[in-house]
Image (cartoon, rainbow, N blue to C red; front, side, top):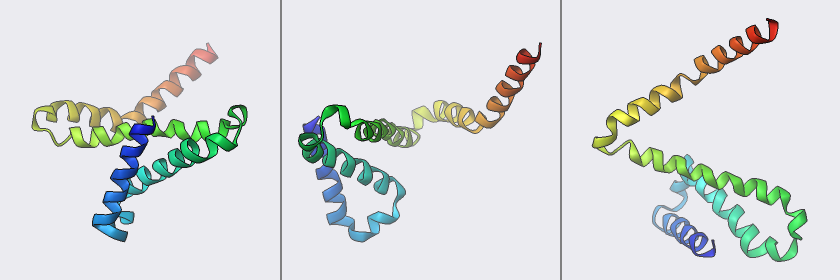
Amino acid sequence: ENIFLSLYVAEAALNLLVRGKECFYDSWFVFDFMLVVAGVSYQWCMKFIVDESQGGVWQQILVLRTLRLLRLLRALRLIPALKTAWRLIYGLLTSTNTMVSTLALIILILYMF
């Protein structure tokens, strides 16, 4: 985990070095930067100070690191061979409101009868 965290720190540092303050206008960079700061503060600082049983809040924050997979989806949509798959994913994402409403109606009907 320390190796990957070091790579993320290096990526953020290089991004800051190249783009400067302009990179803070990019929401993806801000998201990644906050995850890196949370990871560094827990893994390299707080892990030695806070007892593992008291680190529950930090563990919940670090679960957000799995959201980095959204960056992968963003990159995959640029590959021409995956245009059809991206259209399918986009359709599913945009229809979530309709699916949730339908699920709520089905649950309501099942509850009443």
